[in-house]
Image 1 (cartoon, helix red, strand yellow):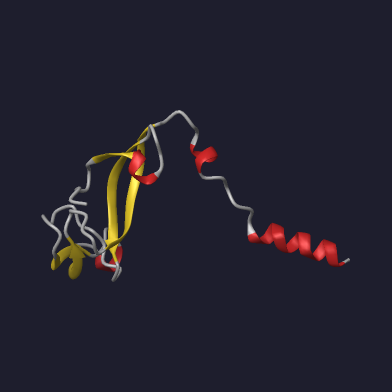
Image 2 (tube, rainbow, N blue to C red):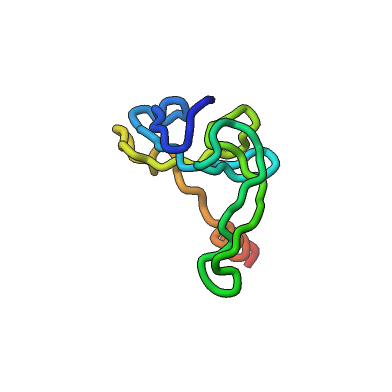
Length: 111
């Protein structure tokens, strides 16, 4: 809690001993994204650029966003690995099999 976008956090908080993570964003339980330019934890309506090209080029829209500080109401926090730990990430989080492969195995068993 009370960490901001851009802060580097120890990975042991998330079960990643030896790793360092940089907070890059997130969203609250209502789905509103965090905005780096809004200070604090409040939810507010801000002008956000609507588009880079096409018909919406140069337009700004008023959208509801959260501040840049993590609060108890946050549902998701995005982070990037800055420093690796001793164990590789694949060992800490093993990849699950795809559903398609499981379906094919079931079809072969029925035959």
